[in-house]
Figure 1 (cartoon, rainbow, N blue to C red):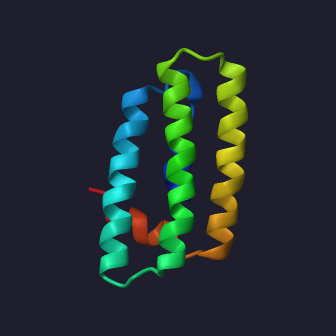
Figure 2 (figure 1 turned 60 degrees about the vertical axis):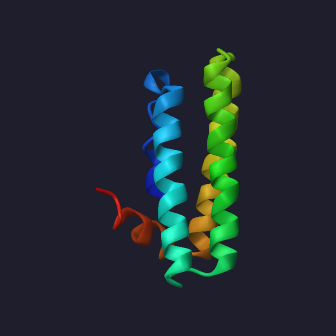
Length: 100
């Protein structure tokens, strides 16, 4: 997840479609990992909050909200992602191992 959120930078060139693609990848990968019992249901649910934060940013971009608000939401998302990484350090590697 850490890699996914970091990949959103730089925000100035980020588009709604970019975030939607990344969210689709994350969603499919998390489902695969959970169904294969490679991650716990707890990790799966906590990762869902990251997807929610990405969705907020995508909607802000889609509605042409000021960059300042998008940056605030990105900082919040980054903090949540760091907490998720601290709680489930293997999650980022598992997700990235499924990236094509």
